[in-house]
Image (cartoon, rainbow, N blue to C red):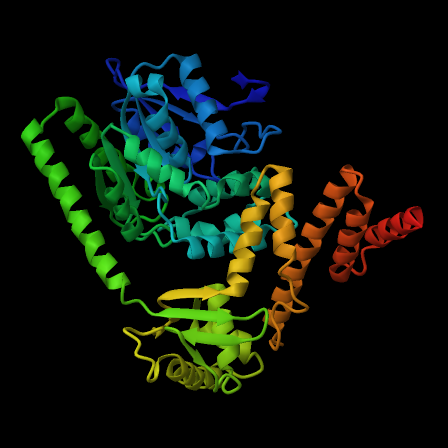
Length: 505
């Protein structure tokens, strides 16, 4: 099917039941394709017609020239539904594909009239931003310089399936191989999630949320939190399944969905039962949020200054001494930037030349020293440094100038309007220092510094180009020279500076 010269690959599969009146619309997750539903379709067909398709830029659907957004993908789906003239349907959507389903279910009047229910698999309506950004950056590193996201897919397949078989792996890797990094990261980010929550709150159809008991990326705790946002939602955990519940447990998944749909169709619950359950859900989560709100008032505040001289403030009190011992400064800054790390990861970063047993002993001593610095006699209400058996992380209201700086860069990069982007880049570059990570010389920090300075260089080139289009050559030259500080060996950049200097003489 063609929409504005964009080919949309789809398949309409007829039900085994000749009297079937409802259709399941299957929407896959980012990086996958329509074949991620292959295992469960035979069960769905017993009762329903099935429409399965590839999102734009996935599988055999064209990517198009426009940036892929939830809105554009929603328009593709609406066009598909309209062209096929499907009357009664249910959306079954997975991962970030669920944002497409929710967007239409909340906003489009024609869809609202024909949609019967919304069934969501591990859709991250609320995902902790810091951790989300960390996951995104890690995945970007996997595909840096690649034509597709296959290498990233190879690292993910064991986590998104509970029992990875050869057939599952073949389907998944084939899907990842067809998706470019540009398409993947157009969709896989945390920026749309606050809008998604708003849309979910507007949906007035029955909602079923399913996730796998063994899903490590979007665990049951994360999925059940979605019940906060809509009283019509119900949540079940599929046993012995990871993210791809339709591959790990196709029969159970199909059966639970069919039972849910049948229950809605038969209207088994009366109005008073509905009201009771809605009031119970609403009041329960309201009280839970209140309990967390009361607890939040007692959170510790940790402010760490990095870019313009190192400094640490806990609950308003500056900690002056002890940072030059036992790698306290290095470990704290690493935790600020990485949020949550494993003990072995810290050993590899800070004691790479030492065998693991001795490195772990050194780490234990170093963590004890850091914990003492942060918490001893500080009137802290809870632990700031949490040291579990495997993981180490900071807890409380944690802020740092460098983390805020990097977050500002990321937000500015997502701006589509060049004028707005230029204004933000100018503000960000006004804050830069000679060294964003002073006094930190481990290889990881040196690589991180290079990465940050590369971003500074890219922003400077953007501003140079922006000013050049306006004929402001003095500003152009200034930002070209700024970029050269971080891209010394860039021949083209050096040539641009030389030519511009000669023209301005």
